[in-house]
Image 1: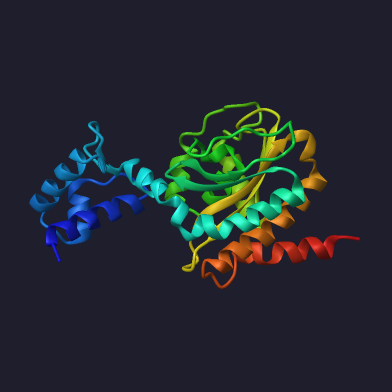
Image 2: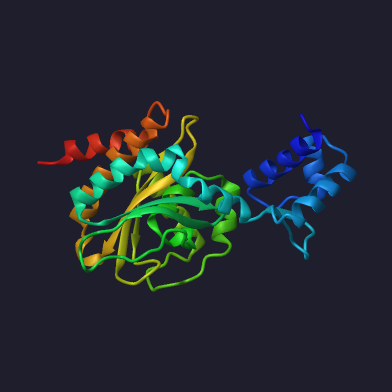
Length: 265
């Protein structure tokens, strides 16, 4: 195999999975390569737009081109294929718009959706991006990210609507609540009057790779409806997780449905 190609791909993978930008020295040390070799690889990858160099810090990040490549083959991936049935079921059960989202650093990217038939609904666009901290699918995924990632997110919180959780301490309390209950709620934090509920999806290795969410006007997302939506989302995300090779969903998700059913009179 071509050693240069292998090393270049190793650099791309390292940057893609890093929570923070990496210096040339960091990359060389982590991969066990000479800095001169890494420097040549980074120049080539930058020219091809796979890597971005921050001029201020001199550190490197993977670029959006990786997401663009992924989007080009998204229809062939198991994630969308396995989610389709559950998304259709959720839309029929709830009447609300259903989103499948992934996390690109600190932003949510909508990779698939099934639109509500209701004339009053939340409007989003496949491929659209929003700050992860103020939508339900984003918070559902951030809840299972590293402390380093959460620290970076809380350092850049911005008040977008009056409901946006822009205080670091309060946001971390929200994250802890999501971990305990197994789902996230957006109460008009991105767009006023638009609510959402979401739960994470795991792959076969137990990593949170996506989130499934429902969104619509606040008038249809009262406390009772939110609990019912969360129950249905828990079943759907557990089903998708298992179809992707996961043995079970997160502990909180695995039991959320049973807890809710048991709590009913």
